[in-house]
Image (cartoon, rainbow, N blue to C red):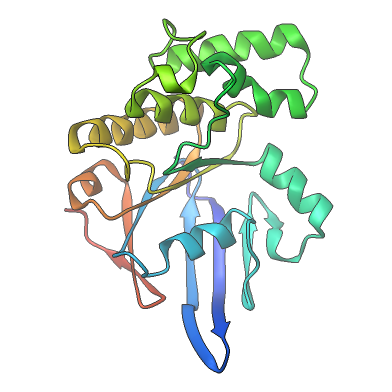
Length: 230
């Protein structure tokens, strides 16, 4: 871990409108995340966790403020450059796993590298290494429906690391898992941060997982504050 920030969020504001009604999802949010940190984002359902991660991951644009990731202000990038950042700099893990049902575990992990046109030998070696990293070296040829929920999330984590991202954004990655499996996935994320040198932002509502993070940010009614580790 270094003192240099990999993520800088300044004055972020996001408002959703439905007819005359306005819902302020983010209110002047500012913070930074150092390279190599695992930061948990805690908050109840509807508090703005997903909205915040979508801004940082470049999946949505704020109404005001800016986000800098690895030295690039992604909130001002044109769509083609933003697509390249999402492909090469940021890895995503979602609650619903997001795996392609007809592909094996190995093929799912390899998809981001295919899109990047990574040479076959390099891609296959990286896939094998990542599946071993997440403890699935014996399941390379199995399809998602043949795997447990925890195993599917492990595949999703391996896939998110395929292109060696600098930042990992995980939105409720344990939300569909039982408490024991959820803790195992969170422990895996912590191990991955250390071994791959990745910075991670992980949204969760499970207080038992907070002790595994380096820092905890709490979001409530669109306002983010530093929270004590529990």
